[in-house]
Length: 229
Length: 80
Image (cartoon, rainbow over all chains, first blue to last red; front, top):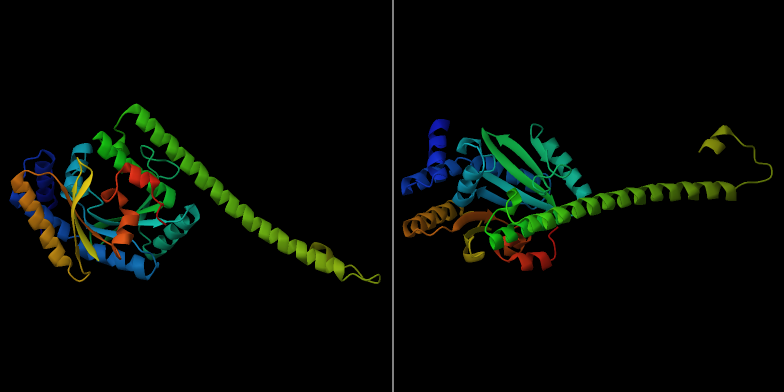
């Protein structure tokens, strides 16, 4: 069993670009140690929740090095060495999946960036520990996902990672504006859905009242139940 | 299915994509490491990543950025 210190020293070599082929093999072995936990989480998501995640059993070396350089973090602290991504239709489905996931993994932590985005990035990350290994599931709505993919695409164009606050100010402003619009649109959609449900309930009540009225006879004796129902 | 992708971040281009059956994760991992060691020796900095999805169409829904540029992503039908 490799110690955290050994892993973190490896992380430092990666961070500073001073790594050898043996370091890459060591990193690969470290990534392989997440496979059991990853498989457990992925199969649960598929079988118990009926979702179709795209799994990423091992974070790429490039992404690991970027993260180490971008953040004050040790390699052993990186939570998304293994993970998955799930894209759902909207906020309501997203909320339901969160609730279902927590039922499946009661000790999971939820990083909800929908109301408090990170550099305009909105999504929910579900982080669960299995056998001492952390697995991160990115849960995005359709629109949140489009934003994230466009941001990644723009990062290629501008050579910087816009998802983490880099890039030209005008591009950042456009992405922030798009992110706010997505949040508003999704919020409105949720309200519309709720209003639709309320309308359906009111319509049922109206039908009941009309039936009651239609059955009235001159000799009808009103009871408290007739009036209150 | 398991997909091994080699992606050139600077160019924004997918260099290679190799698929493996679901049961061949060890083989895919070995191939990933072999490719990474080769590129490291060559001094080539490409992203090498393994992703697992039902098929390539499903992979494109969640990871379109490996297949399309920003224009293609922006004009695509969102996943879900």
